[in-house]
Image 1 (spheres, rainbow, N blue to C red):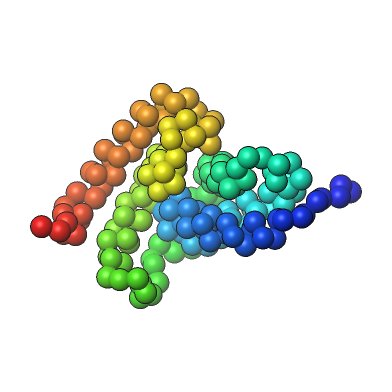
Image 2: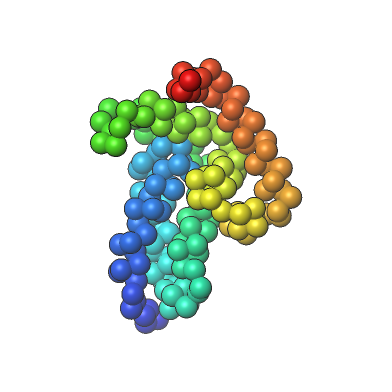
Amino acid sequence: MRHVRAEGYPEFAAARAGHLYRSACLLTGGDTHLAEDLVQETLGRLYARWGRVSRVGNPAGYAQTVLTRTFLAHQRRRSSTERATDVFPDLPDPRGADTPLRLTLVEALGRLPAKDRAVVVLRYWEDRSVEETADAMNASSAAVRTRCVRALARLRELLGEDLAAYATP
């Protein structure tokens, strides 16, 4: 059995777990249980390779790439369409009254195909460049740009008039 050097891993995992979870929730369209599973699998993969990962210039970016690829691999499985529930629990948002808007956006994200959702989350939530997004998805930059335009158009179509109710005059 290999010996894994875990120096610095607990601190890294504690610092990044929340961010990875938020990204995973967006990738999964609000499925918090699947998001937890994806984060757990991502952190497990990072731990197994921590000796090499810790020497990378940007381990946080590497972790995000692992999360995205884990999500896309999960979506290719037949069992990925099984869902325990599609209803969000009614929890108050401690930050303000934008809960209905957030739920509308997450629901619309959840209706996008997996790769389109990944492009939108990486480009606009994670604020990654086209090249970084392409690298995370194992795709060309042109494919990411094309998919991004198509995904945003589809997202706008899905939101339609729902978003107009939240626009401020």
